[in-house]
Amino acid sequence: MAELCAVVGVGQTKHAACRADVSIAGLVREAVDRALADANITIADVDAIVIGKAPDSLEGVAMPELWLADALAAHGKPVFRVHTAGSVGGSTAIVAAQHVMAGIHGTVLTIGFEKQSDGNAMWALSVPIPFGMPVHAGAGGYFSPIVRGYIGRSGAPKHIGAMVAVKDRTNACKNPYAHLHEPDWTLEKALETPMLWDPIRFIETCPSSDGAMALVLMSEERADKHAGRKAWVHATAMRSEPTAFAGREQVSPVAGEMCAADLWRKAGIKNPAEEIDVVEMYVPFAWFEPMWLENLGFAPRNEGWRWVEDGITEMGGSLPINPSGGVLSSNPIGASGMLRFGEAAMQVMGKAGEHQIDGAKKAVGHAYGGGSQFFAMWLVSSTKP
Amino acid sequence: MSEADGLVRLRQPIGVTYNWSAGPNATSHLAGLMNGKFVGKRCPSCALVYFPPRNGVCPKCAKILAGDVEVGPKGTITTFCIVNVPFLGQKIKLPYVAAQILLDGADISMQHLIQECEAEDVRIGMRVEPVWKDKSEWGPSLENIQHFRPTGEPDRVMGSESGAS
Ligand SMILES: [Zn+2]
Image 1 (cartoon, rainbow over the protein chains, first blue to last red):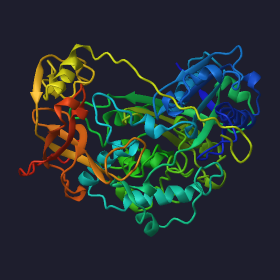
Image 2: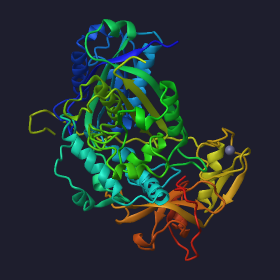
Image 3: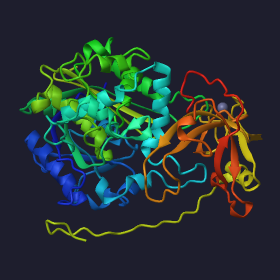
Image 4: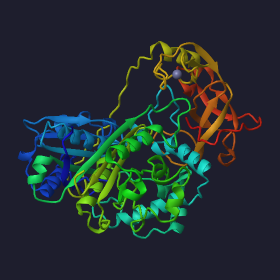
């Protein structure tokens, strides 16, 4: 029987296109110091550290865990690194939680980070390989044909992506840490932005950001003695599948469906749309909000876009998605998954400030990575399972 | 090298050349390209044809792929993206179409460039054929094909799914 685990501290950096004011180590430390302060503990209270970031080629630093050990105050402590592409922030938090759930460590610090301005992710994602033509021009060109597939099969009107983007950019204005603060978007203006990877418009793409997120996790024994608000981890789930196989369902990958089904089962959720109060969903391209609504079992197949159109996913809707502004407003890739997990925790801890969803008791953090091949989710609550 | 705030930022270019061991399965595919042929592999369990046989293994059955199968050279567009993004090292005039092409006889599509027609005329189901570079430029790479172009044949009806795989 697994032990219980609670999030007791959350800390993130100010995300920006270029945090030239800090090194990668400084960026990481900024998030760590905030998480420790939020938990009201010091690094001396931490038993183990689990870090995650996107592929090293994106920042040009191989094995950053080696040289970051001092910035993490890891002296004499176990350090683990997790690596699952864009989902890494989620799977890193899961590995950290599992250290607690397994009864191995009482207090675990976990960090996801990325300093995109130090490297060139576009280049790193477009290098020639013998099996492909380097013609897709970055992640947008990879996902665009899949979005075209969704629009074709669901009959979604063309403005849905822009609606999601305007919502997330507007929400981000309530989040002081968000990279983009752009309060003046309207649907009309959004639809005037150019098609970059047709059918994906400029407004519908995530920025490239520097940023980090850190969480402090505790066992039930420690958390019960710990003053302060907590987010109890009710369930975690991970699934993966190959990037390319014959007949692969790219619009709604089976691994994503399995991951969500596993999460709902473990957490005893019968009707996700009814029982979940808020979702921090990994949406780097706006069209993925309706696609994941369906993939995760919230909306029926081909209906996700209607939920967007009806305002269900707005902050005032019945299933708010990404009140933080999401990946569309801040995308330090290696941190983005943990930002989703951490923001979900902040919601049930009542610490989300202006972008708080009132009375949120159950929240979901979601991340995916690679060619939609790694999926990570957790469900956190203000009360114990 | 330094920012307005006086903090130093160094520019350090990284260039890397790797050796990549193709193994026996991918070798027949790459050797095929050097002879102007599209060589895929069949899964002995599910009989699906992989092109390219990237990992030498059927991702669904985990069986090692077996016999060589020549596919193409014509194919059908299953979905596509119109690229309008300039990026470092890009040599193609914008906008251009990066399409998923299902070569005849293959069960998985691959991405390649569509030229010799307007981007707005490209559609799912469109039949295309390869235009090879001059033989003197060939190597073990899909870049031996300059691009694909429409054949003018009637469109194929594709499934309602993206078919992007
Ligand atoms: Zn097979």
